[in-house]
Image (cartoon, rainbow, N blue to C red):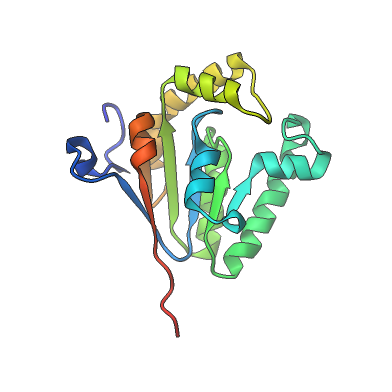
Length: 194
């Protein structure tokens, strides 16, 4: 955890192998996934959240143009994504923002969404080696990102990592390495029944 702000939470027991790291998600929250392309964000989202909870920038680009990689439509795709996410939050449900969220203004949109709904903002940062990101990106059956772009995103992510704890998230979970990514447990707190 060298260089990471102290507000970035890690499950101390994960280091000694006592139990896997865990992420607790309240009944209503905004969860922002942060990391370069190929770092496992979408797979993590599909594994731990219901499809209706996941708001993917790639999916919204595809819904507008038929092409996930169409970066020329990103402004419109993110506007549609955040409008749909706000509607879901208004119903009292969790929202997962599946995008790189590398830039401060991108993370700011997720924070604004949470603050406007008066719910917790949770960040999950994917700190995997660039070689892993490149290999996973290359193995994708759908959209692949150019290797040079993945490398630039990874460098930018590494520079941003020490500052994530100061962005304004209620908690930042840092997932380091493939073993931790495989072992992490997500606990969903549900609203008590009336």
